[in-house]
Amino acid sequence: MSAPDPDPTPDPAAPAATGPAPDPDPTPDHVVPPVVAVLGGTGPQGRGLARRLALAGVPVVLGSRDAGRAAAAAAELPGEVTGTDNAGAARAGDVVVVAVPWEGHRELLVDLAADLAGKVVVDCVNPLGFDKGGAYALPVEEGSAAQQAQAVLPDSRVVAAFHHVSAVLLLDEQVEEVDTDVLVLGDDREATDLVQALADRVPGMRGVYGGRLRNAHQVEALTANLISINRRYKAHAGLRITDV
Image (cartoon, rainbow, N blue to C red; front, side):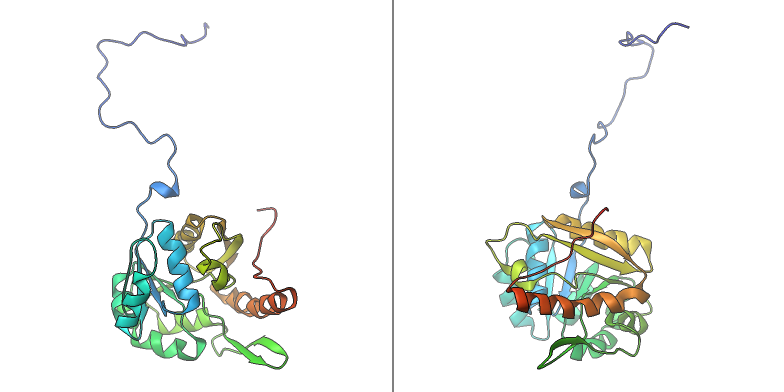
């Protein structure tokens, strides 16, 4: 059998190709990003995450107990960022990040359960206590903050992520890349893939699947160890997962 002609002459009877040529290099950057709402978006962590996501081209809505405060904070951030109250942000977001203090975590989510139904909810809250010995993990009846969120939001898909990202680095305009991996945990593959893709949008950051939601406790608790590292070494430590 002869080898196929490497440059065959087109068959004039063959139908002409129609429509645009396929994208030769489809990447997540070509996908329209979801609107991300950040509850507690005027705090350092929420504002920092909003800043980095907005710089990466993601539309962001900051939520706060005070809509005026959220609007003022949004005006200081780059990119497409708006501000409103927490309920308005919950309704506006396709993906909703929970970045509120642990003390108000359950109450806020109970109040917003209807607004968060059907949405991907990303919980980055770390239940921590502090005493003269430093930071330590608090016991949580449901097992973790993320599991508590899933318990009070049965109609939402809860994902645990962004626990170990330094707010200082997120807000520092001199830091171009946030050098860290983000552990992403959840029970819904589509939801965890979506959150990993969001993390991947931020230069230097990488989303890594870290297991089911039942494993969120140790991820949240590890933040206490990172705080101890930061205090000892005057650093803003993050995580890197090797061989992945």
